[in-house]
Length: 313
Ligand code: FO1
Image 1: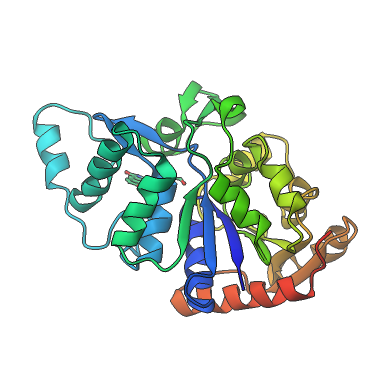
Image 2 (image 1 turned 60 degrees about the horizontal axis):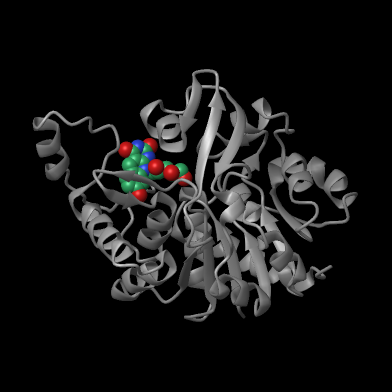
């Protein structure tokens, strides 16, 4: 069954890994947010693409969810000795990804193709597609002023209140043909439990993307990243609140109302079932927390099974 998942970083990558385990090899395509991408020491860093790539390759750091397991940081240590600011923790092995990606991008290869060369070498049986080949950057209006995404997320540890979001470059961006083809051929579309504003939001904001998803006849379901009024990981709960959204599964459902046919929510949010159904969506109430590998696969199987009972609109 051809499944296309939309994902941001760690939470999205975990469900994507579950989907990869649950589906026949080659049936999963993951469309990944690239608005967190930035340049450091002339290297292009694509944190969400790499988080999904390392997770699907089975080499991700299980503690952080990003970076590579058993990583060392000697290069960063030497850069620090040279007086560089090493706030963004690039590991020695991770560095190889950025070196090769940057070289291939400089040679004129599109990011989609570059990503394929990396995922192929890592033996990943799924397709990992950047949301577009154009440069799009999330810029946040915060209580500390205007911040680039990684400045807010890593350097300042998400401590500032987010008051607005801009996606620099989004007007000129377009989904690649391979992304459009993936949605056209999808039998199910799954919105992973990633941050709806800064992970899934940028993917949907690429001009033509929303239309391509809506035009797909596949059932579309979203797994709520909010459980019991809190985000399991990251600042999604505080961000939703400060941007005026309701911090609940129903609030997320409302944000996806025009693109999604079904919501997967945790038992903790069972009392929101009616409210979500009233939006015209089907609802699956289950254990939506992914504690380990078997949990990811269990949730993925439930999500795929659920798509079978959800009618595409
Ligand atoms: N996240 C952190 O919180 N601190 C880091 O130092 C850090 C380094 C890092 C290096 C490579 C990479 O691919 C991801 C990295 N991340 C780090 C994660 C990442 O910046 C965020 O999780 C995402 O951008 C949000 O989805």
